Image (cartoon, rainbow, N blue to C red; front, side):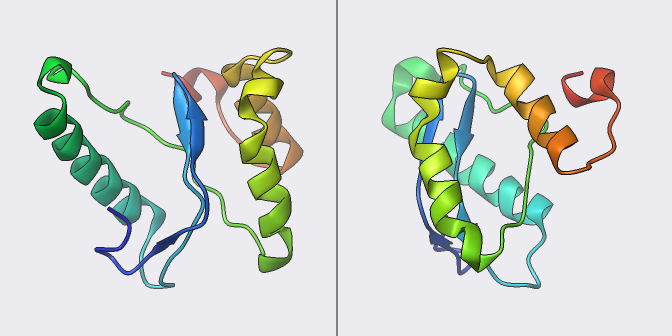
Length: 113
């Protein structure tokens, strides 16, 4: 799914309510275009491969962050520890904490609709 637009997947992990897919991709490819492609192709694959999951659909939004090359290992470690972290913090709290930590301005009611 990521190879089509010329991307390379660095890692993958997630929980029932979210997934992390750090990838390297072309500078001329926007987050929104990349995620539209990933959601479309993965939904198609899920529906074809698992007929009992015809009701599967991705949520409308997404969170996308850029990471410097020097931080890739740190991010991969963060992603690998999803299950462990979920024991002490829910997804919503963790996501909002990430936004605050990195100075992203947001309206909390708009983040999770």
